[in-house]
Length: 188
Image 1 (cartoon, one colour):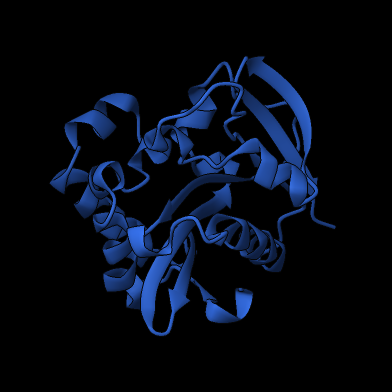
Image 2 (cartoon, helix red, strand yellow):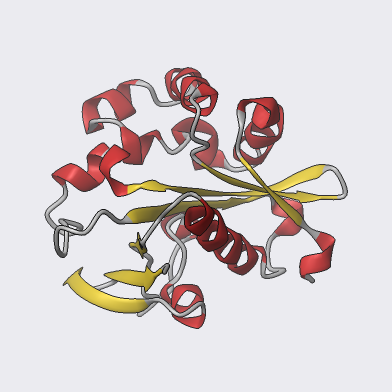
């Protein structure tokens, strides 16, 4: 299946493709990953057009904030991955507080357009997010997936499911919430 997709950094020249992915998903259309980057009041105040405008500025910065999956020149999916330090939500979170003082990168969000769902694209996005982080100097990757102890709503799954991370070699290093472990992968 991987041959059907290509994976590229989410750079400013791909903004229209990234927006097509977000626009095909109700919550992602309004969030634009601002949930992770902005203080909660700013994130909520920007819901919709404000977060869209903020995200355009993020993508214009030199370091891409994630990767994009492409299928035959059509945008298919997104995975947010960046150094943990840039995510305000993680700096303030007790459940996702740092496990130690290592400079980790974080994978925080998956969005897959409707025509490409249920085809294993999240797993491929994860694999390529790991490669992207390694290529950009990450020593260790961290994520905060959902452990599907109970059935989840689709909107609960933006951080990914525990199973795809474990299958990629991540290991659980902490669990401060019943369904939200912290998992890690050594990159070197």
